[in-house]
Length: 225
Image (tube, rainbow, N blue to C red):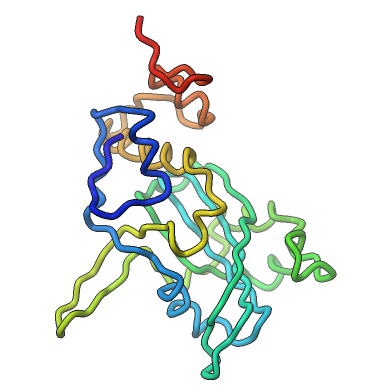
């Protein structure tokens, strides 16, 4: 997959390893999702240090669920600093595929309590039943209340809206396998290009997807016969 963009993200280097010029990702409509933008979108959600916010990301049919914990609040009770943890990642081909969607979400109190181990609230083991949260997302049993896929910029009264977030600066890139997200983007364009006629099987592992493109899994070079 070839990526066209003046901005760069943490997975871009893979286009020089798994070279495939038949697929192009025109990402020129991108913007850098900074921690400041994240704070601006969180400040009316959280009010105290220790507050937990959930962030859901989808690329094609791949999902990532993050827990964001507020660690510092400014004088105006606006989020200032946060810590991120990846709760789970999974595939769901029953969902409508999206190029990329990124939104803060919330669960009902019963779902939240079922997944939470309150004795480990501020540890990485707080949500011992991550499957409860994943199932809630798969069955649409949650609310998305702040979509940050798009962002508006203002310059001398002129509004410009960008639609593809660059993820390297906001903190979540530390918890995402670059190959997973690269292949998810590539799969999106493959499925869009095929217009319903699949060119590869749904639900393949990353290694199987690499093999489908003719690469040797150990060396990452294309096999030429």
